[in-house]
Image 1: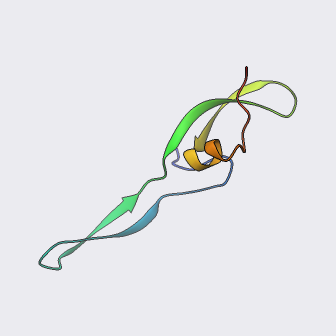
Image 2 (image 1 turned 90 degrees about the horizontal axis):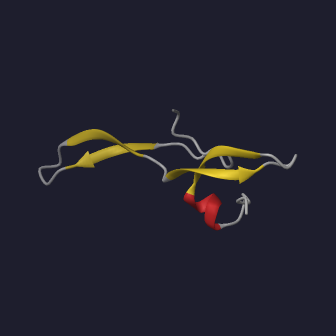
Length: 64
């Protein structure tokens, strides 16, 4: 499963862990993705992988 939001396209970000001794190792920040059931434009229900920002902002509509 790709760690990508199906609505906004948010992906993992990359950077460094920096220790107290200033050693650097690569790391990544994954988006907070959830699998939710969403109503499609045709009226059907589909399971989509969406970030929590899209859920709270109302970009998807959940079925009743």
